[in-house]
Length: 404
Image (cartoon, rainbow, N blue to C red; front, side, top):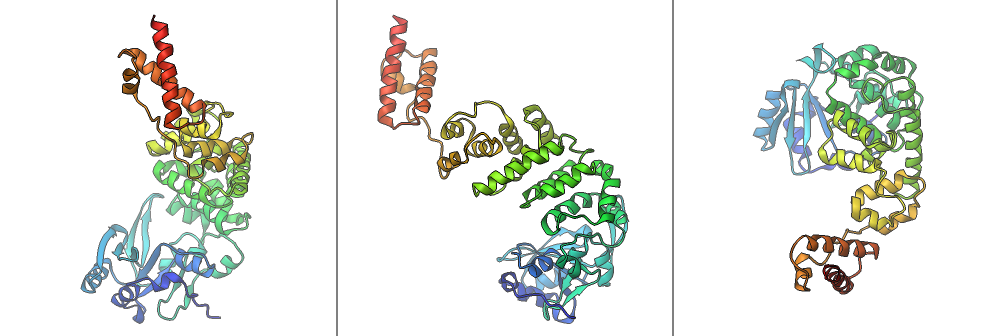
């Protein structure tokens, strides 16, 4: 039975017809491929467009330039160029097969065999191609059947696919969490468990990127439990254990109950012990940005106390971190989150000069007095400038009496 690609908004993007004409899609030289085909079959939104072609990268660039389309050789060593269009970028990759690989990068050769190109991909559900003109889908490894059964399966021999790119171990569990029924393919799971130590050969940036994508999935818990049970994370993230997966389950329940969108860093924090040293070490190991590391650490700090009013907490550690702290701490009421929606921490509407103008002698007392004004202002829930003026008068008087 012939299965065709359903109509979708992305198929009507401005400039796409011109691009396909330049690639001679009407002559069978180009097909949609991968996630866009898979997600369209599932009725999911598509953001990234990928096209496979029998044309060489140079031919693609020449034809796109002739059609007035800007093209950038973003991954020319792997046969990929990017068409830069007003409606969004489109990646175009020449059909290829692996000549050799070390588990991190591959040496490739071009081919004109669609099945050969499909055979080098990771999972059957990602090896689907669609003719842009007829919509007819080419499925060489029963990917459509697997998609319908919510089955995530490596193409061919699972161990061989993992040996080609060790990152496929983490990708397997991400796809299982997103598209599977939380029941792994026995061969695929066994191959991941056997090859877990090979993750150590990958750059920490690649591991972090893939793992954070896994945590962004709606319900990553069952897949993470399989990873912990199989020792998948032990070589690179030994801090994550079954207890961490239980904490994550509680966090996900609280996110859902409060209609708070998931954040990968917050979910990573739930997986880790409540210890800032561990958070810092994990952030450094994964080579997270300084901003991300600070957020991870703030989420797991014990201080300031959790019984502070939510806006006071947010003023001290930032709104993002306060939201993280509230969601991560089951003892904190979810209702506290409503007071932070759309709220921006205010700035104390007075400075040291105003205290000097009130008669305070310039010097170290100014900073001390200003800090005291600020503490009272925060404790009173950030009153307006009129009340701050009263607090300033009282504080200056107090300091002046102390000096007499």
